[in-house]
Length: 258
Image (cartoon, rainbow, N blue to C red):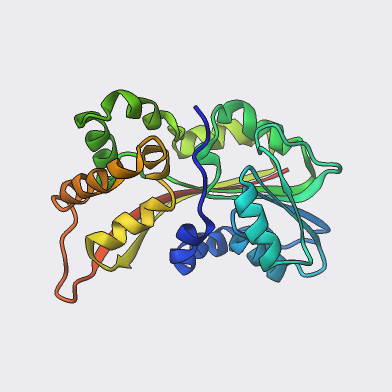
């Protein structure tokens, strides 16, 4: 399955909300000298900017599989180094003091192989810091799968369900990384994002979770799909008096120090 294209503009419509977990993840990284840090799946550079502010003396590299995202990141942070690369096959030119992955690993398979591989690219005392959405069973994503399976597009859309990796729980990641680490921290947080009604939810996920589905539709099919999706999520998300909707968004965080 070809990777659906990323839209930096769509993704950054919710920059503040998407950057908050990036900051929360970085705040848990142990205080130590960081000379070389890598933003794995850097997207449009909002998470890379967080790294640069925390470690202003470090060499910071951002990698992403999307050339569009890399172009946006380079424009945002012209003094940083960026490269188009797939995280699951990338290899650094030198070991790092910090490997940082904000909302990227859920798109990559085989964490049992990938995470230990990344640990091997760290200097002693370096950290692998990962944050991933843990929302495949939230009503937003259940609705995506239900709408995809119920229309004339069902045959084409079946493969979109597998674009995201079913991630493990806290125990899985702790047991995977503990033998390779002096310290592992794992926690799960649910954010509650106030969005402008059901349209706000649709716009949020057009920049992330809905991408694999929309990429398989013809232009004249996308609006009917989104209308059915909006109707379906209306059963689970209700307008408040001010017209806003609170979107619960669970995420899992991991900081493993070698």
